[in-house]
Each structure stands twice: as C-alpha cells, then as structure tokens.
Image (cartoon, rainbow, N blue to C red; front, side, top):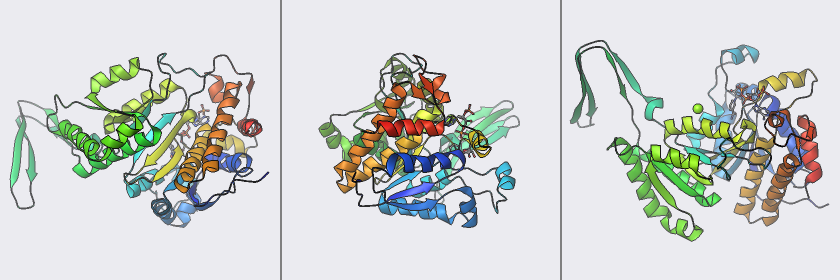
Length: 399
Ligand code: NAP
Ligand code: MG
C-alpha cells in the first residue's frame, strides 16, 4: 500500500514518562504505516532538556514559529522531587510556559465526545471549547495586608512624572488590598487568537466579563474584543456563517449550562482557570481533552491536556500492563497532520487525519476502551484493554 507523502515537516516535540512510550506507539502503529511522516524532531524529554540547558525547548519554539505547525508530547515540569530523581542542573521552567511565551499564544481545550460516554450535563451535545487568556489579572498581582487605620490608594506614575491617583478605601481597621493589571497588547492578541481559532473550527465565539461593575478594567476587555472583531474578523465570520456574542459572565455561565455546547467560550484568565476544570470534569476524563496553542499570527501547537501519567510509567517499567488512554495524544497528532495538510494543499493527509480520528472514536463506540473510560461508559464496555492493545484495536479499524 502506498503511503501518503508530506511536504513541510511537522515540529515534533517528544516528552516524558508514559506519554513518551505512547507517543512512539502512536507513530509506529497508527501513523507511519499510512503516512511518509516528515518531522523536525526535538527531544523535550527532561534528560535532554537538562543536557542542553533547556536550549532544545527554545529551539523547538523557534521551529514552530518558522514551520507553523507543531505536535507536543506531555513533559515533566521539574519540582524538588524531579531535581533528585533526574539529578538536574537546575529546576527548568515548564516547557509549556516557554513555548507559550515565545508564541504569545492562547490555549484552547476541546473535549473528544463519544456516544457511550455521556457528559455530566445532559443538555450538552457538542464540545464546549474553552479559550483561556494566559496573562495578567490576579496571576500577576501585588497584595498588601493592611495592618490598621489608613488610606489605600491606586497610583500610576507616567514616564514624565505625571501622576494618576484614586482612593480605593479609607480603612478603619485591618484589611487587605490587591492590585492587578493587564495590557492592551495582550488582550488584543488574546482576542485575535480566539477569533482565528473560531474561524478555523467554524464555531461561534462567546465572551463575557463583568463590565457593568468594572467600568474601566473589564470594559476594556469588551471594547478591545469589539474593535478587533469589527476591524479584522467581522467579514470573515459572516462568510463562515459564525457569530461573535458578548454578554455578562454570570449570564454566560447560565447559558453554557442550559445550552447544547458547540461554541468557543473565551475566558478571562481566572474565569478560564475555574471554568476549564468544570467543563473538563463534566465531559468525563482528562484523557479525552485535546489542547492547542494558537498564536495571534496563526502558528499552531497541538498537545494533550493531561500530564506524563507518572504512576502508569512506573508500572510500565516493572513490566506491568497499563491503562493509559492515548486518545488525546492521537488527536494531537491528527490535529497537526490535518492542519499541515490544509496549509500544504495535501487533501489526502487531512483526510487521513479524519480517518484516524474516526477509527479511534469507533473503537470506543464499539465498547473497546481503557480503564479510565470503563468506569464512565454507558452501556458498560465490551472489552477493557491495556494501553497497547487499545492502539492495536484502533489500527485494525483504520479504513
Ligand atoms: P497526569 O499525568 O495528568 O496524571 C494524573 C492522573 O490522571 C493519572 O494518575 C491517571 O489517573 C489520570 N490520567 C491522566 N492522563 C491519563 C491518560 N492518558 N489515561 C489514563 N489516565 C490518565 O498528572 P500528574 O501525574 O499530576 O503529573 C505527571 C507529570 O506531568 C508531572 O511531572 C507534571 O509536571 C506533568 N504535566 C505535564 C503537562 C504537559 O506537558 N502538558 C500537563 C500536566 C502535568 P489514575 O492514576 O487514577 O489512573
Ligand atoms: Mg485550574
């Protein structure tokens, strides 16, 4: 059987532990038999990051800017335990943070739906995609514990020395103060990433803030989204038959829970932190959650939302069977292959990505699944399989 050729290589970022094992199996069992896979390979495994003083992560991010499409395995973010486990020179930064900073991107998380895993919210029929602004607000704040009577003020001093000053509160006793910020540039690129992603996926965008209360801070988010939409996206949205919808945060929460899904929910940083965990849990499993980083100028990095599944890896090392589910990793590869196919005009490559997704979904729909899903499935599974057998079952179903 002839394999599908590629033009431009994908940026391939290998990772750690169980996901590194699954990564190799996904390639050899599901992709390479059908595609003449071309990748520019970067080993982001912790040992190699340490050996290169983390240069490899920066090179991989640069390659993503250059080639436009990357696929990333899960990687360890080192902490104290990992320092001794891997005898590291330094507690290297999270690769995801490095790549996000280099691409100035927004992360979009989308659940994979199958008919026999029902969402916790009965009205949900289509995926709810959460796009989280990953800069500023309470995550980059300054706080003061107020000891007693006194005046709390907000002060801005311009480069030329001019001052803006407002009283926050006249304290009669102990209390607390918090200062937060954001930048026009960051909000603008967040808006662009959301609208770009929505066009790509042909879904509506919902955005909400509390601008009735926060008449400068949240109102700026609303204004910037409206400007970016009107100036750069309105015509393309109309042509694609999709909409931009703005409302208040409490209203949007009610609408999301009562609705059937199928939209991109753009969230301010804190809203996204809280709501993405709610949406992920209600849809079932982290192993069924895909994640893509989209830069405002249209670079794409596909990954799984889960980590390296450390506990399963230690079982694997002892020669035991594991129940790791590779769906999110498979969908990271198919997302990247489909996008590469679109950009390079390779319809066969994009069609293969869809075939592989359909084979994966059909496997679970047929009642063949790993342990994490077996607990959630209705009707109960026909066959609970280990990590490798699950991939073999998918391979048999690729048409
Ligand atoms: P994790 O790898 O997401 O795993 C936590 C638990 O979730 C697992 O023990 C397993 O539960 C379940 N799980 C996650 N993915 C699964 C899958 N594909 N199939 C089946 N079950 C799955 O999180 P962690 O153990 O807290 O973190 C491990 C390492 O991952 C850390 O070093 C962290 O830095 C890193 N991490 C990386 C990324 C990334 O690169 N994107 C994201 C998060 C964490 P059971 O044990 O109940 O089976
Ligand atoms: Mg969270």
